Length: 336
Image 1: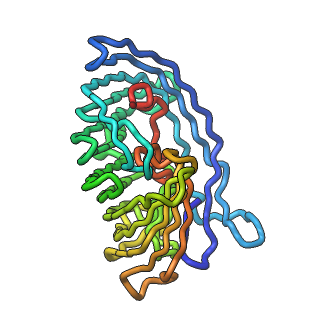
Image 2: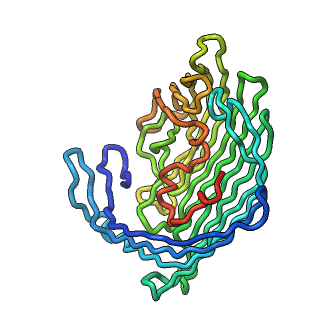
Image 3: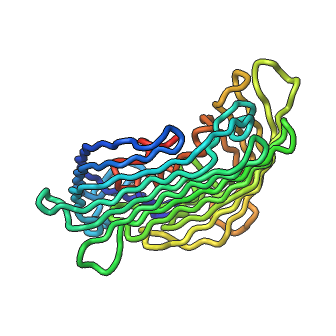
């Protein structure tokens, strides 16, 4: 679904999608610093089945996007390589209130390089993807970086397309056991994406609090700082915490449909945290916040409630960028 703007019907393109892959890897080296080498054959076909407008009364046919997106056919032989040099440090109360989690320290890289096969019904193209994970620190201070980038080059063309990239840098500091200071910055973007693609300030799994308008673009940069305190002595059956945060983000239109440039949009608020039972990795979070920039449509005070596995959510890409990716074989074969 593509957002067109506030109080304007959304647009959608329906696809018939067929995909398959087969492959394997072999493991070389020792347990701590293994090397993976392998290959895969991937097939994918996406045929547009029509474009539609999503109205308050239902779905109706619409031609606004009818000619923008062509069929996508991929048939590739892909080489896979990876190298890991990671240790893990156990930290308590970083992403969750009081739960422990294992944080990677060291370096890991995963990559793909594929060649399209016209004889199998694909395009004559080259596809490449790299996933880099790095971490440094201890149970008191920690820094983690995760970058994923992919792109495609049609043989005979002078540019790359289908470029999707995201990155996240997280910093943690625990000056004492009940207190945490966390800072982060993240980026996501797409260039000449061949399927419907938008990035928004508001997504299913993240939101810049205080800005509820349908702001979308092709590139997004955000970040924030959060301070949190775990309140002791209230109950032995649960963890309770309070905190405050300042966040900011902005969009660039890029070549996304209906994308727009925005100024830097800051916001601030307070949070209440809860986890049941004591030490649970699942976190209930209630945020109350407001925008710090005026004059933005549909901005104002907002209450947000989330319930997630906090130790897992911090390592996942936002879904609006993850679902635009093309590769079928991902670094899950190697990810901690």
